[in-house]
Length: 341
Image (cartoon, rainbow, N blue to C red; front, top):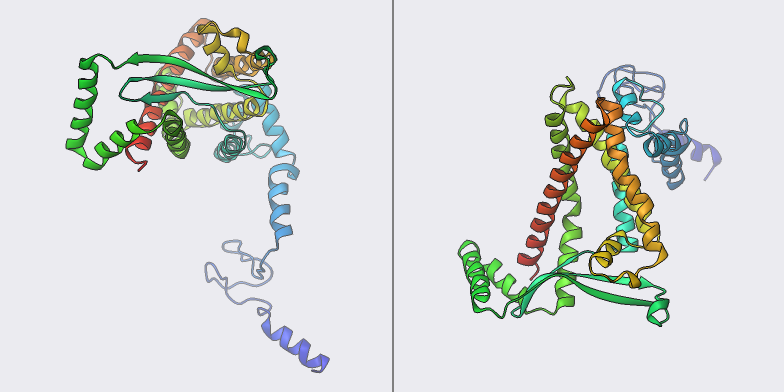
């Protein structure tokens, strides 16, 4: 085929220049962009390299947004919220985008590292809560590699007939609501503890994103009630809630990346099993204390008030929030039990 024919065919496949109408708003336009809506008049399909460049440029290269945002988030509690409310928004990532990004990072870390969760156990012999912890390099146990320790956090024997009758009555009552739920609970009780743990873990992690989304606007509502005399609108409290929870996601991701388990350290202390802990468990206290201290400092910077007043409001806030999270966790595990079959 002659070269002139190739060139003619190529030109015929290109969009007209200049474009007469915008592909988005259909306004008459010319040049590279629509004057009415800003749409490009000569679109093309981007390659994988362009997608990667856009992502990296948006979060990192564009005026150092990512690094600036993380620096303020980690080391200047409440500063991101103050800057956002004052209209200083270009140098940092928007609150909702930061929240979603760090939540995805945390979910990825959960998938990659795994999380040891307290396990509800329900059998015909006992019911309670257990915690299985994998100890890295347990030299004190005289074994190589790792060892798993099972601790009964709460345990009640069901040898008492009245307790068994109560369980049967509860299951029968559930059957009046939904027969399938009753069958699934009965099947769950018959499962081995290891399988029960897998069912609960799978259900909890599957419902975790919904739990966090449900808890976020409630967190902002608690702030509005605690600071109802501050004159701040609900949306301002919501911005603070996004930043506070984003910080929690980031620190939780760091804690999952570092060996050790602060929950196991607390359980071991209560059960007098500190011999089974490691230096990594104590190291986890540093980010945990940071997590606890962060919120009251951020609250005082944003809302003002004395240290004592802020500490009291923080105590109320964190107690109510953890109570709601616990209730949502129980609901997630209930959903896992009644829907696992």
